[in-house]
Amino acid sequence: MSKQLSGIYILWKREVIRFFRAKSRIVGTLAMPFFFLLILGSGFGPAYAAENGGGNYMNVLAPGIIGMVLLFSSIFSGVRVLMDREFGFLKEIMVAPISRTSIMLGITLGGVTTSTVQAFLLLGVSLLFGVQLNLYGIPLAVLFMFLISTSFVSLGIALASKMDDMHGFQLINNFLMMPILLLSGALVPLNNLGTWQFIIYLDPLTYGVDALRGSLINASQMPLWLDFAVLAGFCIACITIGAFLFSQRE
Amino acid sequence: MTNVIETNKLTRKFNDFTAVDSINLQIRKGELFGLLGPNGAGKTTTLSMLSTIRRPTSGTARVNGFDVNTQQDEVRNSIGIVFQDPSLDDELTAYENLDFHAMLYGMPAGQRMERIKEVLELVELSEKRNEQVKRFSGGMKRRLEIARGLIHHPKVLFLDEPTLGLDPQTRRNIWDHIREMNKSEDVTVVITTHYMEEADSLCDRVAVIDQGRIIALDSPDKLKHSLGGDIISLEADAGLLPHLKKIKNIKKIKRMNGEMSISAQDAEHVIPAIFEIAQKNKIKIHSIALRHPTLEDVFLQLTGKSIRDEKAGAMDMFRTRIRSRNR
Image 1: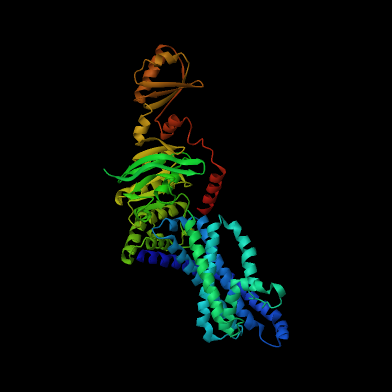
Image 2: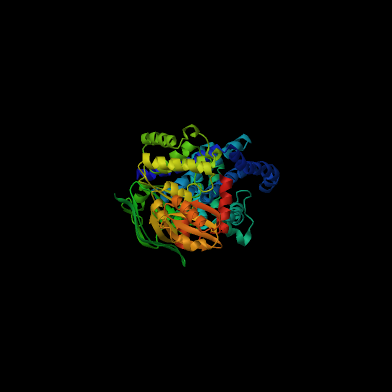
């Protein structure tokens, strides 16, 4: 048991070391959400205010962008297992006397940590730009960040277990991450889809973004317990599928 | 002497293709054992099964007394492995790579530091311990991988083509390290290779493997002696042939496009005898060369083909390219 734990710990530590070692990568991954926040925020701000009779779009956008950061960085750190396979390092892990489930847990915890750190960096940046966040809600937000991130890292690992090389990553980017992002209402709240309105409720990130808005700006559209229940269910499903598919790989 | 690895009809199939075909192997404790064969002979697949990476289709194998099918964790604790392709994390330092490994194998903290220091010294990389692996040369990476394989005191260390893609000087250096740690660490070493010189100069015993089967197994010297001694290549008029048969140390004469290939024991003394006969009979000798047989000749004899003739497949060429880029 202690062996499994030390294995999980070192797998987590490796992700964290790698993350902080590549300073340029941190800047690179944060640049896009930063520009989204800045440009979308100032560009659509007036339109949003006119539509809603006032209200600050930046405040609504910031939790959404945090959700976006969590989605992208989490899926990517899961899919990065593929790169470890390509560069041979995965073999070193796989031949060690610890279980596949522990390996997956270690990688997942590492991905969750680095994603949450990125989310926090962005949260800090938003505060600098004058976004008004409810600081008391941060502990609750962290809980939801963990749920969102754990789900998507596991999903990434599940996908990576089914792929043979990095070529499939473009597909994931275009057909999975972008729809999840756009349908979640992270950038623009979606209320005018008519008969297609139900589709946003099929997107797990909808509940994630809603929960982040609930905890950070007190403006959720659904009750937080519902967000929590859906995300927790999604999270458990992803971990189970991820662990199963990951252990299937020879 | 006890066996640290025993296999019984070990077989692995990929769909219709049989990569490893009922292999029976006994590898002794402390031995430096070689699996020699061309690309695609089944060496790596055999190693994968012995190290629990792949499951056998049928047959069994025991490593350090543990069954590779039912006692995977025990087997994994007993072995270290250096893969054919590089498997270090380039972004981590040498020390971090080793620490990662030691933690993964559940070594307690105090022991870990001590041991990492020890193996770094063994492969002479102590000074580079805090450097990122991406700045290492190919030979240094290999040495680090060997050190890593040894950290958890394995009973058996598997080395899959340990010197592939390295220059001759580095190769010799790696050989020295392998010999050294085989002795000082008291570890059984199993290497796969398709380099004849490597098997010859390193291994106590060599299993020659082709198309998934073991076709010969003995010490390199005995394998070479099985050919009937040294080889004299002689270019001379054909009239010499009947006379040569009288020399008693000549075992076998093969004629290949005008050249005679003579297997002879104690060939250094056979050559003067050949000259004597030729002079006596006024037959002209155009050229003569003596060489000691290599494992290449053994392989040629057993399979009728040369190991080097094996065409590298597209995958191998791609691999080599990737490798030269990574190193």
